[in-house]
Length: 414
Ligand code: ACO
Figure (cartoon, rainbow, N blue to C red):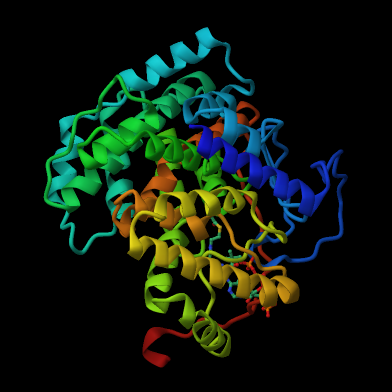
């Protein structure tokens, strides 16, 4: 897949030219207490733990998994290898990767009970993320080892979840179209098999490679809302299935993973590159958030969007409707960067171009966020496992601003 690798390399070189800095952790060393605190709305600036899993340098636009730059992982790695890296903290040898992959493949199938439950869900009214949440919950009830909360036992569950969530998401995609789920094909890669289980057809090699890249790019991203949710649930020594269900619930929202779906609805609403300027003016007037832009941590162009943009161009080119979506997106990107980028450091995030990639592969818009979850389960579980090794229950505090001496009035006197 030289063409895809070339596009990633060009995106990496452009990022280097524009940000000209090597990533360095900005927060190191011990925090000594007591410290003076300021309440950061949405926990802005709060430090929850130390980690070796991944690092986001928001001002320079760099993303690192276990020391490895996202551009290198996108170009040279695979989703399977990236999962191993996140879970075990090092790149695998060929033997280790083969064994890990064999384990993933062996765990791809899901119990019929999960599929039966999915078929009972009224698909027209239910968002696929709600179906995914339900199915993962059912999966937990079927695993007799689910309640074992040692790091080793939870790592096994993490591997099962990485393998099975792709199968579940693909089954949801098919059931929504009134089609029977497709059994996994053990000869295919994780990304290839995922596409195959969704479409029922052997995947186009370029689509397979690009889905693999998309899964790598979405695998981990600091203490985002869904990762933190997963870790908070796991810190009470609940179980890994419950923790991942928590992550799915959090990812679903439009301010987080749900944005990828909304981007497509916005681009369809805009309709044509020539309408972008007027649409954006109206959005600003009405204080409407532009989906796929902005980030709590990135105050620079998201490196994942740098990679996904040329890949979206590549896959959308053949279909006039998808090509128009891409051109509309590029125009919106330019206008937002010129205006909000300068004023508020708001740039495209990972969700801005991913939807065009998935749409060009023939995937239904409502399935975009489940695809995100199929990847992010690796980061959720890697960070929950890292924290579990030296677990302490998460328990922040709030500053109470209500009354303290209210007189209780009996109900008939109120
Ligand atoms: N469109 C327009 N203005 C924006 C946007 C946007 N997408 N994002 C931020 N801004 C503005 C804010 O209104 C704010 O302006 P103000 O200073 O005048 O009040 C300023 O930029 C700073 O943004 P915050 O509100 O501080 O950003 P916050 O960290 O609270 O929220 C978030 C981050 C939720 C991602 C936000 O940018 C947003 O809603 N974006 C759209 C949804 C989206 O794309 N989410 C996906 C994020 S990536 C991910 O989760 C996988």
